[in-house]
Image (cartoon, rainbow, N blue to C red; front, side, top):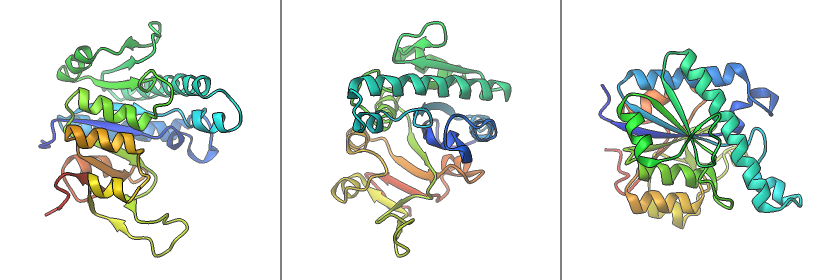
Length: 241
């Protein structure tokens, strides 16, 4: 059994689109559900925050002239769609799952109540936090950091399509170097954009370590939870030794 008791996994909405680049790929979401099922089978309590960028990105829509608050609420609703889709995929795999929404949508999700979320986790249910924080101008990264602190997660796992945090964009700079470990302070001072600064600061203030890893590699979730050296770890004590 893993030494990690409870994790919060931040999933990218864009990652669910697969090669089509938009919407939800059944094969991709099925693969993500299988990875989560494997972690659940390790006896680890699982919470998930998922974005809505495969349907709409609030900041991008605002940049094209839409009111930012309206665009962000649309993004929150998109995250609810993704959450319900992931719930369906996980429950088909045998993992009892609850969606808790920061926006009131009682026909499809329970309202977010911290103590209720913790109780679900204690009963062995996976919990998906939908609709971000319920407020515009906050990213789903910040929602993930907030929920991780609220439920006292041992680790925030940031699932990306890159194998960790680099000192430059590896798709542009062939000399970009991947960090095995970083302190919160280094991540903030170097303005590394793997998460927004508000999210990193929240994790720092509440002592929640962050693991950034490639979600497209099968087995990576299990390896991170098991404490193997995968991707980049950000914490107060970043020395992997």
